[in-house]
Image 1: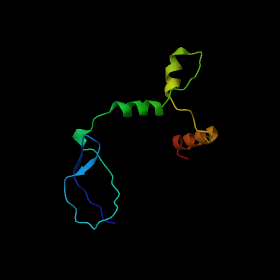
Image 2: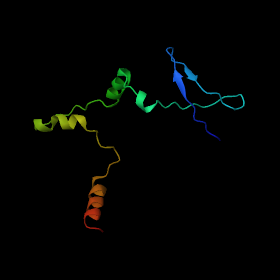
Image 3: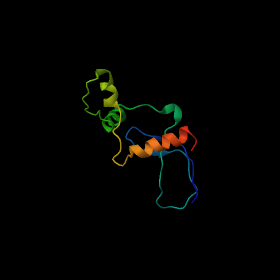
Image 4: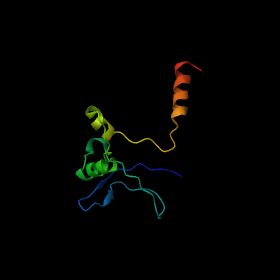
Length: 96
């Protein structure tokens, strides 16, 4: 499959407008849109979505200094093996 790199714009209605002609046969195409590096602007909607993707954990601890840290960390995966992690750390430390 041959790929083409073209320039285009998104108009006010949200439609993609390709500014260059392409010498391809008619048919369906797959389009990947990458914003131009200097034109990337953070939209408020994307910021809201990213905050929703990382909700804070509700953790209670007697050590108040660690409360914020626990809330901002991700929980460990259910398949995490602490003994395996210890063994890997020892192998790395002592070059085993």
